[in-house]
Image 1: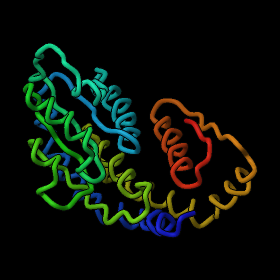
Image 2 (image 1 turned 135 degrees about the horizontal axis):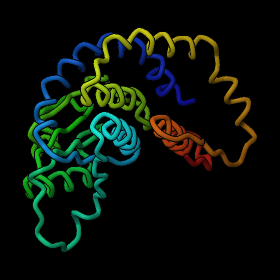
Image 3 (image 1 turned 90 degrees about the vertical axis):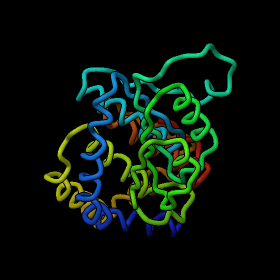
Image 4 (image 1 turned 90 degrees about the horizontal axis):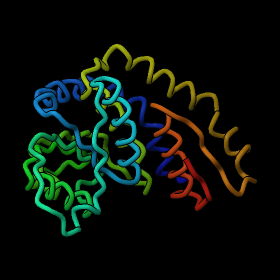
Length: 229
């Protein structure tokens, strides 16, 4: 495992403990904007796209309505003028600079949508900020490894809070589970099991499906392995 990535995975339990209250308060401050709109639009790609899959399931369960999974390519096409003023966009981006996500966010905002950007960036001058109404800074810390690890975990927990669920009572269970996983060398057992496999399929559904999708993506990004979720 990339040493940067391993270090960042090991930081996650302490990160969650230290940021949970902030994530909860920031989510509470944004809920009125989310509830004021009829539709929720989810926007992201890669790891952030997997966070959108999680958000789609969770908002569906808590609101009884399926969010709109927006395809960024639509913003590059010659389409009829449309009204998105009944929508709030949750734009997930680790850096805040993803060109396609920024372009799609701008496209939606120009058509009346309200936008909340969820990002691990720290600079308020990032590109996504210029086309958003609100910024949810995750403050997960620097990501040195190419695959986003801390940001993804922060995105998932922040999403839970944005749906209106109180995350605070569950934080200790989450961090204890993470520490138990790391202390019991489960990752080493997984490596031994997977090392001679040419293709890996990660299977899951519902709220766990994003974990399968992101596990496959991490294998593709780190060891160039054929992996699918």
